[in-house]
Image (cartoon, rainbow, N blue to C red; front, side, top):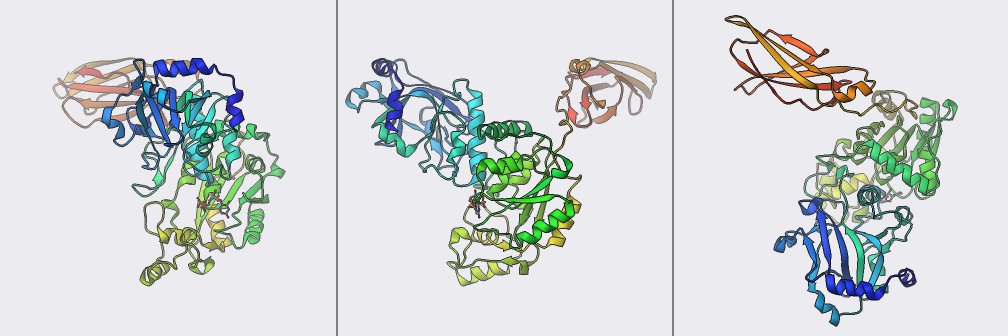
Length: 540
Ligand code: UDP
């Protein structure tokens, strides 16, 4: 490892002079610590103190310059999990003159992206918190290219999915524990610190019970571009059409815990019901590339709730995800995979099935607490949990009732599962050949105008007309409609109208000698809303 950095040629003397004279420079984006990513020249790290160091000189820059607010609570989140108090980033400050008394700095010549992985042992966390955010943070800054160096500061070892992280750049990612091999004071010539949260869709329940993020900003398009990138890096060819006779279902099984006890029976039933082959995969038995290969052409993925379901992002459009929940676990309350499948443009079907028969469940009260054991709890608490029919909503991460229920094994009741599938699947699941539906929104309608006339003391007319949005003439749109809102000035309600043409004369509810405010917008295919044109003031 220590060889690796020194191989890269860097003018040590020039770098040292630059650091001594100019100090550290930082310019960030983002108003809050939760949406901030910072770019640094000469950010240093003391492996002895385990602290980042900002060197002040006459030429150093610190934007935002927050003063003591930098500690309230931090400069930024080092992982993509929002405002988690174990994931904050900050630096210590020193005058550049102090360098004279410090160990000789070792310079990292690569452009570095410095971040915390949130939970590299768990595949959902690997994809949702790390891989996707790293991929799109790199997409945001042109010098974070395939030569970039990822630096993981959370302090964990490589973990079981390190090969996935290695696909994001051509350089071996560095772990915190490796930094001390390079020296006592490490200086990153150019680095970015923090991760974009733009692609995350789920919050894990640290401050309120888990659920979809309030303001999801990612669509299936970005997810799919990422999965295509990763598949290609792993040498998996995806995307050839699947012949009808070759359609198949994937059962993603867990072999250590949360088992499907009658997997063979389930496989036979699925094959029979859908007249398709059924294959099983598991993280224990297949390589990741093999799993992606299987999923990328599958018609359906069936699995117990669990992190392996994040692999749904490798399914083709039109496929179905069937998530099985153990006894006592309400699917509505644990929706990371349902939320993934229902991102706009993901084009995946989703069905949840829940074991409602306690006798079909096998519990493990004697196991360790983190595998759902409850033997360590007070007798009454154990009895309450055993009697409870559903885990009430709770915060992350150590709720014993939740862990007890989620780590049950399940005998899947085939009849009730097939019922759920017959009801839940809206169309025959399978790779869709049809092109994805358009997501192009209308522009503003142009030249909106109103004309008015008074017929009698209690009768008036209001004609509104406009031109089509500029982009419409280049598009093939199945259905173009317009929405007009009319509000009498001073009132706080309005009347909405959906209209098929570019003008309309309103006479009902239109009063003489009154001012109306009128807004017009275009709508493609019922759901793609355009912006409103500037408001019209229409006096009758
Ligand atoms: N895992 C697995 N097989 C098993 C149990 C777990 O592959 O039998 C994987 C699982 O997909 C996840 C990691 O091990 O990536 C941790 O599993 P855990 O049960 O802690 O988390 P969960 O799946 O509930 O998110």
